[in-house]
Length: 157
Length: 152
Image 1 (cartoon, rainbow over the protein chains, first blue to last red):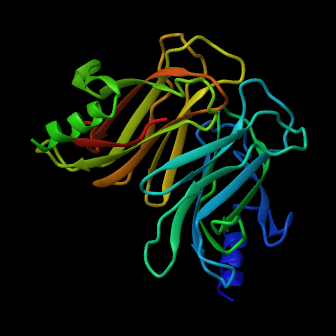
Image 2 (cartoon, helix red, strand yellow):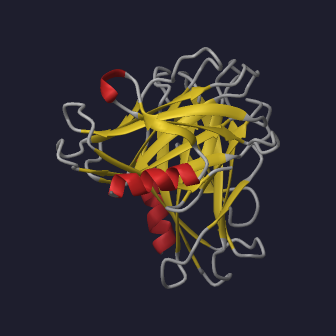
């Protein structure tokens, strides 16, 4: 129920035009448009991800990939970042619209109490221009098994 | 003393050339190399910045810009992020090696901890300079402490 509620919150927040389960088992993936007016080079989407043990095991890391669905534009690339209050990583889709996502980015988190981990994920780009993108994110155990993943959207630009 | 301490931490973490420079003594500056081995597309520099009132006034926002000092390479651009609480923004230096900064990124989150990061879009070493400062609502520099959390 908690997961369903937060997924509904995600949809309501309109970060992701189409949110749902897709890809491999229990993965979370969604599509959205960054900078729909095409005038904001600083446009950044931001969300908080809570990882917890949903019965599949305690969380160890957060996994993300991003795919740029728009036509290639020189100097315009889309990236996703994962960070905590201690560390950060990122990955960029280096070829737009080729139907392949970026390399995965993973970040190992820490227990903030009760077996819960807290991460932030963001999506940004390098120049003005609307970008349609798809993002996949899910919390995993040390053995890369999907485990409890909730998201709350903070900012949509 | 506090400012000296955190500046030394910053230096110890190998961001060289730190100091205040530029117009009206604004902005601290530091230079470093991201992905010195040239084989880590995900290399990220990450720091926590504490904005506080040092007598110049209450912090209103944190501002920063990045300059890519390396020669241009197709598809390889350096970006900067500022994050605090529920806000995040991004700027990118669109022309590497031209001697110009990116636009300044600003997040208005008052006093407290902001996070600053530098990243790039592909494989390849990038020399960069970053400028940063906590400012009052009137854009006067105020208390700015930085602690480097990660350099890759």
